[in-house]
Amino acid sequence: MEDKEGVDPASEFTSNSSWALAGGPDSVSDSVNYFFDKESNILSEFDWNLQPDHAEQIDRFDELDRADTRPYLAGSFSGSHSCVAAAACGSVSGSGTASSPAGGAADVSTLIPSVSSSSGEDPSEKYKGSGGKPPEIPSKARKKGQKRIRQPRFAFMTKSEVEHLEDGYRWRKYGQKAVKNSPFPRSYYRCTNSKCTVKKRVERSSEDPTIVITTYEGQHCHHSVGFPRGGLISREAAFAGRFTPSVSQFYYPHGEIPASIIRSQQVPIEIVESRPLPQTTNEGLLGDIVPPGIRNR
DNA sequence: CGGCTTTGACCTGCGC
DNA sequence: GCGCAGGTCAAAGCCG
Image (cartoon, rainbow, N blue to C red; front, top):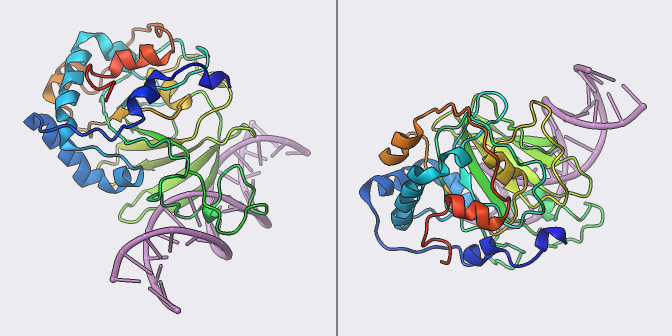
């Protein structure tokens, strides 16, 4: 509806978001490989294809970052988060409450998922668990054998002491599971809005307990509820909270951020500057954080 | 009392 | 077929 107005530039560039480039700078390649090694289970689970091939473009993102994206990437989650993600948000309906990014950012982690618009047409979709039912379909009404339709997912890493970020929406925890090969459990949250099917998972990296990996699934069909603590929202939170499909992200694993980014970002960074978001449009967001050349791939 | 968290059970898919 | 792991359900308990 209102979230689908017009053509989504993001989807335009992510509709075939299994980017395949060739080769890449060493530092970033290492970074990517690092991420694959350490978080491959998570990434693969999310269908993310973070390949060394992306290094070249990530490096360009690096340049972009030096250009003036930092304030936009800065996060201000409640608690002591240092946001690690840069994400582009697709179809955003209105500017909502995401208008005042505040400081407190750090590790700009990026990640390139092959965010499939996964409407269930993907034969490789593995609907592990969930009783195999789509969120929209109550368990009782669910037909046996019906495949759960997985919503597009979006994730980011956050260096944080607390796990639950405030992203402007209210969440209800509906489950927690121990994760294999990880001492940290994974928590499952669902948007408290009864009409909203967005879910999110929160888990800590087994490799770096200071890293919180938050995965959003689905798309909010409503506006955020605002921010009780100061009313400031980070750009990432805005992205996350209003996540829509057709989004591409970039991840740098903590500690493996390309040196140039570290130079410009420092880790962590306390950014006091509060700068209004440009327009919360796809164009604006993408323009901020997506390296040139990536967008139309 | 309503909303939320906790937690064990259950379901499903996948690999062997 | 079986076991494992992930995801969800739902009852019970907690809290404001």
